[in-house]
Length: 602
Image 1: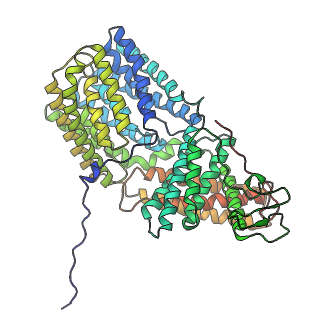
Image 2: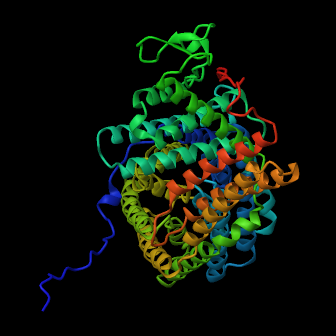
Image 3: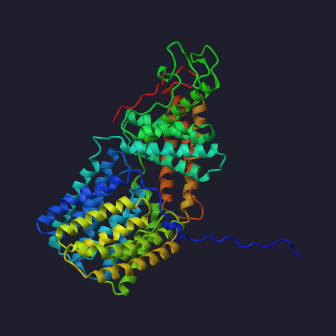
């Protein structure tokens, strides 16, 4: 008989209380909150003065586009907002035409589910979000159950388009004041995360969570900086150097200076000049023109003219400088690669689309079977659940249910005030819009507390409805949508998502090895060098796109975020070597004329 004591396998429990825990608000929580109010208020108040509150749902469809792209540089934001508005108009048009052609609820639910699946897949493929597809699905699903005629559709679409144009202006309004605000915020977050990782390492803790968060922040910063593909400005180049400094800190967190990283992050967040990253060759960094300067630690002079031995700290700083230069050249090479076409990015998202279509359709059908006349809320609830893994999907279901249940209680309290008159109704809608965006960063359920009365108040615009019926219907649809949507997430999985990331990592490794061999071979032709360089750059771009797509899926293993970032770093340095091999960059062994350029004040 064995003396070993049998042990039971550990069962991973799905969280309930933890899913409701409040986090810290976003650093820029007020931006989407104020933007949506600025976008919704003028069209709504104008229609109120004209006595046409029944048209506000159409203008609100366009106004809600102001919620998008707040993390994008303004050059990219302009394009993203335009595409979001066009996507919203397309979904709204399909919904309105369907509503005018049939009143069969089963058909309308099917159309809504198919629209939700398309919106989910396209938003995931193009990385549009937050709030991603949820707002688009809310608009199109609600429009499906509004009585409509074909003759009314052009006017309603025109109202939505006009409000969308106003939302575009609202989203672009801060550009003249802070033209590099999104890039600055992303860079500051990467520096803060790197500092937290360094503090953890210095404290002797393992800090796996801090390290993972830091790599994710650096990855997000690169996404923000690389999304604009034209020639980078002086400010963006300076921000790229700071992100590379964050990467250097992650590579050796025990040797990093958290205080300096946080100081850079604070300076970047403002509107002043971009801080220097410590080029040891610059006189402004403490060196005299004769090449003699003070050691960084104040211990005495050191020489940097090559005529005397450099101290260890200067050598290390020179190495960091060369690494920064290498990665900046690699980043420039990656930026030059044309993005993959949209259709090629949609293929791996087929399971996501199938899951969304199935979950939304079943939720709508069950709601209809229970007697609901407008089951769009069950459909939207199901569409909003799907997250990166099954645990997060479950958490979102819990958050949605709790938030909606508390929200219907808030609506019951607010409804008497909203029914005092048109102005009171519009002001309540604006308050709910602001509250939803201000609170949703703390936790999704907290934002849902305001989203639920907002959606119910919108149904009051054509005419007041009994509060009790609205509350009862919303509770039933919420429970149905959450339950059926979660079951669909469990039933339809994409087990290939992890293999796609592994395959992309392997491709980058092989392309990097090939490029390194070609660059090291003296007999390599310029054509071979260019082919190797472009092949590696394309592989890096594909890796990022694959990792982003996989981040919206769930499987047994976590996304290898650290491996993705490390593979990108190595690829950037290899790309720099191929550029240097072609004579476009001085060799590291020669005297470099590379200097840091401080960014101008935006």
